[in-house]
Length: 119
Length: 304
View: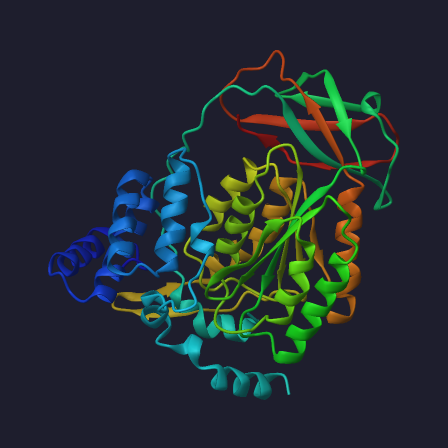
């Protein structure tokens, strides 16, 4: 729906997911996508709040941390690059599995494809 | 990532339209503006210029130049390297070797840092004078995942904000952004307000893939998104007064990186206290050199 610019429907759907208080990865996804909608609409403060909610659910989520940083930049806040410091025992950003269906982890398939196209 | 990989993973990129982005909130009032400028003739940097050789126009108003800094000053360099899955092991080794050789030319007083980006951004070495930290970090590079080029540019800009120092971000990529959260226009806005000069170094021409996503109500054409991220590198370099370079292949990468560092040292920093212009809003900048046949590269404007 977001890709098709159906923002209102996307917001209603995502809010329904968020209010159901699902598992942390799903809460993270619902909040980051809602934050992105606000971010896109120029509502940086609201986006910041949602990114923070996402990070409360999944502290290792880097996409939310990057979005949060920029939402704060828009508000003239002092910036840090905290999102660049990745703990060794971090858990993957749920966005990776949502958007790519774990494709990004299929290194073997990538190597196979590379060999097929650029032998 | 290479075009094929981009095609495969590109469905993850959210490209929304929407309202114009909110204007950033910044304090107005600038005591001194610093403009980093490259002066070339036939693509060769010209050295030895002094304040009286330059003219600076701020919103069309000629300014009195306070001073000009040149190549003697130490530099900050943030190396920002694409380590997405499209690089195989031997390519990654060649990338590390090229960077290692290039940074060996850094001088005492210079500072450098290292950021890598794939589907994750990582600061392997923070910006510091500990240049000895770079080689071991380069030895540990690993390739995996998608490409967050736009997010990486944002990280590089944020990591090089030391006041009063000459800052360079070198952004190396072998392909196309597929996974950034931030949109190109947002990061370009950050770049325009930054004093960091960005040189982008690519390995090969990026082909915009034909990507359509089958949705519930028809299809979504992602080509415009890929066009925008392809344009992004050129726009980023232009917004900061830097350059977009095509290394072509790994054989030329080391030379290209060495040339970037050499060229950056031969740039000038022109400082002036703005006079006769409003404090707030966007200021257009024009830098002229009183020599014939020269080209000047500098950022096109700034915002107090």
